[in-house]
Amino acid sequence: MTKPPLWPAHLHHFCLETPQINAVVPWYETHLEMVPKRLDDGSVWLSGRQRNIVFWPSADKGLGYVAYALTDASQLARFDAEMRAKGVSRPDIQSSLFADGQVAIADTDGKCFIFGVPVKPETDTLDRLPGRLQHLGICTTDMDRLIDFFTRTVGFRASDIVKNDDGAVSACFLRSDREHHDLALFAASSSRFDHQCYETTCWNDIRDWGDHFADQRTQIEWGAARHGAGNNLFIFVRDPDGNPVEMSAELETRDFESPPGEWKTEPRTLNLWGDAWTRD
Ligand SMILES: [Fe+2]
Image 1 (cartoon, rainbow, N blue to C red):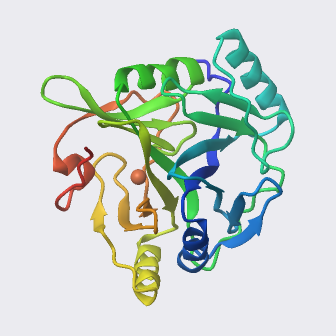
Image 2 (tube, rainbow, N blue to C red; image 1 turned 60 degrees about the vertical axis):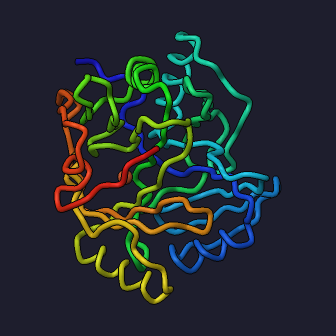
Protein backbone atom coordinates (compact mmCIF):
# COMPACT_ATOMS: atom_id res chain seq x y z
CA MET A 1 0.00 0.00 0.00
CA THR A 2 1.53 3.33 -1.06
CA LYS A 3 1.77 5.94 1.66
CA PRO A 4 0.46 9.42 0.76
CA PRO A 5 2.83 12.43 0.92
CA LEU A 6 1.33 13.33 4.32
CA TRP A 7 3.11 10.37 5.95
CA PRO A 8 4.57 10.80 8.44
CA ALA A 9 3.25 13.99 10.02
CA HIS A 10 2.51 14.99 13.59
CA LEU A 11 0.67 17.80 15.33
CA HIS A 12 3.19 20.59 16.06
CA HIS A 13 1.14 23.58 17.24
CA PHE A 14 -2.21 25.29 16.89
CA CYS A 15 -3.68 28.76 17.13
CA LEU A 16 -6.61 29.63 19.36
CA GLU A 17 -8.50 32.90 19.21
CA THR A 18 -9.29 34.31 22.64
CA PRO A 19 -11.30 37.27 23.94
CA GLN A 20 -9.25 37.33 27.16
CA ILE A 21 -5.61 36.92 26.23
CA ASN A 22 -4.51 38.55 29.49
CA ALA A 23 -6.17 35.72 31.44
CA VAL A 24 -5.35 32.86 29.10
CA VAL A 25 -1.60 33.46 28.71
CA PRO A 26 -0.85 33.46 32.48
CA TRP A 27 -2.97 30.31 32.83
CA TYR A 28 -0.85 28.43 30.31
CA GLU A 29 2.32 29.84 31.92
CA THR A 30 1.39 28.46 35.33
CA HIS A 31 -0.67 25.39 34.44
CA LEU A 32 1.25 24.07 31.42
CA GLU A 33 4.58 25.69 32.33
CA MET A 34 4.90 27.34 28.92
CA VAL A 35 6.93 30.50 28.21
CA PRO A 36 5.17 33.37 26.38
CA LYS A 37 6.66 35.42 23.58
CA ARG A 38 4.79 38.25 21.89
CA LEU A 39 5.04 37.99 18.10
CA ASP A 40 5.14 40.91 15.63
CA ASP A 41 1.59 40.26 14.44
CA GLY A 42 0.12 40.78 17.95
CA SER A 43 -0.28 37.11 18.79
CA VAL A 44 1.40 35.37 21.72
CA TRP A 45 3.43 32.19 21.22
CA LEU A 46 3.52 29.95 24.28
CA SER A 47 6.13 27.23 24.22
CA GLY A 48 7.57 24.37 26.19
CA ARG A 49 10.12 21.89 24.91
CA GLN A 50 7.44 19.70 23.36
CA ARG A 51 4.37 21.91 23.27
CA ASN A 52 3.48 25.07 21.36
CA ILE A 53 0.33 27.20 21.13
CA VAL A 54 -0.29 30.56 19.49
CA PHE A 55 -3.01 32.75 21.02
CA TRP A 56 -4.62 35.39 18.87
CA PRO A 57 -6.64 38.24 20.47
CA SER A 58 -10.20 38.21 19.15
CA ALA A 59 -13.74 39.20 20.08
CA ASP A 60 -14.76 35.56 20.40
CA LYS A 61 -12.97 32.35 21.22
CA GLY A 62 -12.31 29.97 18.36
CA LEU A 63 -9.82 27.93 16.40
CA GLY A 64 -7.37 29.96 14.31
CA TYR A 65 -5.54 27.10 12.64
CA VAL A 66 -4.01 23.68 13.25
CA ALA A 67 -0.39 23.04 12.24
CA TYR A 68 1.22 19.68 11.43
CA ALA A 69 4.97 19.18 11.02
CA LEU A 70 6.34 17.21 8.09
CA THR A 71 9.84 15.74 8.05
CA ASP A 72 11.61 18.02 5.56
CA ALA A 73 11.21 20.33 2.55
CA SER A 74 11.16 17.42 0.14
CA GLN A 75 8.15 15.81 1.81
CA LEU A 76 6.47 19.21 2.02
CA ALA A 77 6.96 19.76 -1.74
CA ARG A 78 5.32 16.41 -2.50
CA PHE A 79 2.41 17.24 -0.18
CA ASP A 80 2.08 20.69 -1.77
CA ALA A 81 1.95 19.17 -5.26
CA GLU A 82 -0.72 16.69 -4.20
CA MET A 83 -2.94 19.36 -2.63
CA ARG A 84 -2.61 21.49 -5.79
CA ALA A 85 -3.40 18.51 -8.01
CA LYS A 86 -6.53 17.83 -5.96
CA GLY A 87 -7.64 21.47 -6.14
CA VAL A 88 -7.82 21.90 -2.37
CA SER A 89 -8.78 25.39 -1.15
CA ARG A 90 -5.67 27.37 -0.09
CA PRO A 91 -6.31 30.11 2.49
CA ASP A 92 -3.80 32.97 2.71
CA ILE A 93 -2.47 32.22 6.18
CA GLN A 94 0.99 31.47 7.56
CA SER A 95 2.46 30.35 10.85
CA SER A 96 5.51 32.12 12.31
CA LEU A 97 6.63 28.78 13.72
CA PHE A 98 7.07 27.16 10.28
CA ALA A 99 9.71 27.88 7.65
CA ASP A 100 8.93 29.33 4.22
CA GLY A 101 7.15 26.99 1.84
CA GLN A 102 4.47 25.95 4.35
CA VAL A 103 1.18 24.74 2.90
CA ALA A 104 -2.15 26.04 4.22
CA ILE A 105 -5.39 24.31 3.25
CA ALA A 106 -9.02 24.73 4.30
CA ASP A 107 -11.08 21.71 5.31
CA THR A 108 -14.68 21.23 4.23
CA ASP A 109 -15.89 23.20 7.27
CA GLY A 110 -13.52 26.09 6.40
CA LYS A 111 -11.02 25.39 9.20
CA CYS A 112 -7.38 26.13 8.36
CA PHE A 113 -4.74 23.42 8.52
CA ILE A 114 -1.09 24.33 7.92
CA PHE A 115 1.60 21.80 7.03
CA GLY A 116 5.26 22.77 7.27
CA VAL A 117 8.73 22.29 8.67
CA PRO A 118 9.34 23.92 12.09
CA VAL A 119 11.76 26.87 12.19
CA LYS A 120 13.00 25.78 15.62
CA PRO A 121 14.41 22.24 15.64
CA GLU A 122 12.22 19.83 17.55
CA THR A 123 13.60 18.19 20.67
CA ASP A 124 13.14 14.90 22.48
CA THR A 125 14.15 16.57 25.75
CA LEU A 126 11.29 16.35 28.18
CA ASP A 127 9.71 19.29 29.99
CA ARG A 128 9.76 19.24 33.82
CA LEU A 129 6.25 17.85 33.54
CA PRO A 130 6.31 15.79 30.33
CA GLY A 131 3.48 16.53 27.90
CA ARG A 132 4.06 16.52 24.16
CA LEU A 133 1.32 18.24 22.17
CA GLN A 134 -0.16 15.20 20.43
CA HIS A 135 -3.72 15.63 19.17
CA LEU A 136 -6.62 18.02 18.80
CA GLY A 137 -10.33 17.31 18.66
CA ILE A 138 -12.71 19.30 16.47
CA CYS A 139 -16.49 19.19 16.17
CA THR A 140 -18.36 19.16 12.89
CA THR A 141 -21.93 19.23 11.63
CA ASP A 142 -21.02 17.14 8.56
CA MET A 143 -18.98 14.18 9.72
CA ASP A 144 -19.10 12.11 6.52
CA ARG A 145 -17.86 15.02 4.39
CA LEU A 146 -15.04 15.82 6.84
CA ILE A 147 -13.88 12.20 7.18
CA ASP A 148 -13.85 11.90 3.40
CA PHE A 149 -11.77 15.08 3.11
CA PHE A 150 -9.16 14.11 5.69
CA THR A 151 -8.79 10.49 4.55
CA ARG A 152 -9.21 10.63 0.76
CA THR A 153 -7.86 14.12 0.06
CA VAL A 154 -5.33 14.92 2.81
CA GLY A 155 -4.04 11.41 3.55
CA PHE A 156 -4.96 10.65 7.17
CA ARG A 157 -5.88 7.05 8.09
CA ALA A 158 -8.90 6.20 10.24
CA SER A 159 -7.93 4.23 13.36
CA ASP A 160 -11.34 3.89 15.01
CA ILE A 161 -14.84 4.91 13.92
CA VAL A 162 -17.72 5.31 16.41
CA LYS A 163 -21.25 4.76 15.11
CA ASN A 164 -24.78 5.30 16.39
CA ASP A 165 -27.32 2.47 16.09
CA ASP A 166 -28.60 4.05 12.85
CA GLY A 167 -25.09 3.93 11.34
CA ALA A 168 -24.36 7.65 11.64
CA VAL A 169 -20.77 8.33 12.68
CA SER A 170 -20.50 10.14 16.02
CA ALA A 171 -16.69 10.20 16.25
CA CYS A 172 -13.69 9.32 14.14
CA PHE A 173 -10.05 9.07 15.21
CA LEU A 174 -7.49 9.83 12.49
CA ARG A 175 -3.71 9.32 12.39
CA SER A 176 -0.87 10.59 10.22
CA ASP A 177 1.85 8.48 11.83
CA ARG A 178 1.87 5.43 14.09
CA GLU A 179 0.04 7.08 16.99
CA HIS A 180 -3.62 6.05 17.17
CA HIS A 181 -4.92 9.55 16.50
CA ASP A 182 -3.50 13.02 16.10
CA LEU A 183 -6.85 14.40 14.96
CA ALA A 184 -10.22 13.47 16.47
CA LEU A 185 -13.53 14.41 14.85
CA PHE A 186 -16.80 14.62 16.80
CA ALA A 187 -20.33 15.05 15.43
CA ALA A 188 -22.01 18.06 17.04
CA SER A 189 -24.48 20.89 16.46
CA SER A 190 -21.74 23.30 15.38
CA SER A 191 -18.33 23.23 13.73
CA ARG A 192 -15.82 24.23 16.40
CA PHE A 193 -12.66 23.48 18.35
CA ASP A 194 -13.17 20.68 20.85
CA HIS A 195 -10.02 19.93 22.85
CA GLN A 196 -6.23 19.75 22.95
CA CYS A 197 -4.21 16.81 24.25
CA TYR A 198 -0.69 16.35 25.56
CA GLU A 199 0.88 12.88 25.64
CA THR A 200 2.95 12.11 28.72
CA THR A 201 5.42 9.27 29.22
CA CYS A 202 3.50 7.12 31.74
CA TRP A 203 0.67 6.88 34.25
CA ASN A 204 2.84 8.46 36.97
CA ASP A 205 3.02 11.63 34.85
CA ILE A 206 -0.78 11.85 34.98
CA ARG A 207 -0.50 11.71 38.78
CA ASP A 208 2.08 14.50 38.73
CA TRP A 209 -0.07 16.66 36.44
CA GLY A 210 -3.05 16.07 38.77
CA ASP A 211 -0.96 17.17 41.75
CA HIS A 212 0.30 20.18 39.78
CA PHE A 213 -3.24 21.23 38.85
CA ALA A 214 -4.24 20.79 42.50
CA ASP A 215 -1.42 23.16 43.49
CA GLN A 216 -2.99 25.66 41.05
CA ARG A 217 -6.41 24.98 42.63
CA THR A 218 -7.71 23.77 39.28
CA GLN A 219 -10.04 20.79 39.49
CA ILE A 220 -9.98 17.82 37.15
CA GLU A 221 -13.28 17.84 35.22
CA TRP A 222 -13.13 14.36 33.64
CA GLY A 223 -11.03 11.39 34.66
CA ALA A 224 -8.78 9.91 35.74
CA ALA A 225 -10.06 7.33 33.28
CA ARG A 226 -9.16 5.27 30.22
CA HIS A 227 -10.58 5.85 26.74
CA GLY A 228 -11.93 2.82 24.86
CA ALA A 229 -10.87 4.01 21.42
CA GLY A 230 -7.12 4.66 21.71
CA ASN A 231 -6.93 2.92 25.12
CA ASN A 232 -5.15 5.92 26.64
CA LEU A 233 -5.34 7.02 30.26
CA PHE A 234 -6.41 10.62 30.71
CA ILE A 235 -7.49 13.58 32.80
CA PHE A 236 -9.15 16.80 31.61
CA VAL A 237 -9.04 20.35 32.97
CA ARG A 238 -10.34 23.56 31.36
CA ASP A 239 -8.52 26.79 30.55
CA PRO A 240 -10.11 30.22 31.33
CA ASP A 241 -11.92 30.20 27.95
CA GLY A 242 -13.45 26.82 28.80
CA ASN A 243 -11.24 24.94 26.32
CA PRO A 244 -10.69 21.36 27.50
CA VAL A 245 -7.05 20.40 28.09
CA GLU A 246 -6.31 16.66 28.17
CA MET A 247 -3.23 14.96 29.62
CA SER A 248 -2.82 11.42 28.26
CA ALA A 249 -0.66 8.33 28.64
CA GLU A 250 -0.36 4.96 26.91
CA LEU A 251 -1.99 5.98 23.62
CA GLU A 252 -2.07 3.00 21.25
CA THR A 253 -0.08 2.79 18.03
CA ARG A 254 -1.15 1.35 14.68
CA ASP A 255 0.61 0.27 11.50
CA PHE A 256 -0.09 2.26 8.36
CA GLU A 257 -2.02 -0.66 6.85
CA SER A 258 -4.17 -1.37 9.96
CA PRO A 259 -7.86 -1.17 9.04
CA PRO A 260 -10.15 1.01 11.17
CA GLY A 261 -11.84 -0.47 14.20
CA GLU A 262 -15.53 0.14 14.88
CA TRP A 263 -17.13 1.13 18.17
CA LYS A 264 -20.69 1.82 19.31
CA THR A 265 -21.74 5.27 20.49
CA GLU A 266 -21.91 4.59 24.23
CA PRO A 267 -20.04 5.90 27.28
CA ARG A 268 -17.72 2.88 27.33
CA THR A 269 -16.19 3.88 23.98
CA LEU A 270 -14.92 7.16 25.44
CA ASN A 271 -14.43 5.93 29.01
CA LEU A 272 -13.92 2.28 29.88
CA TRP A 273 -14.02 3.15 33.58
CA GLY A 274 -17.20 5.25 33.82
CA ASP A 275 -19.24 8.10 32.41
CA ALA A 276 -18.35 10.02 29.26
CA TRP A 277 -18.62 13.62 28.16
CA THR A 278 -21.27 14.11 25.51
CA ARG A 279 -21.14 16.89 22.91
CA ASP A 280 -24.13 19.02 21.97
FE1 LIG B 1 -8.45 13.55 23.19
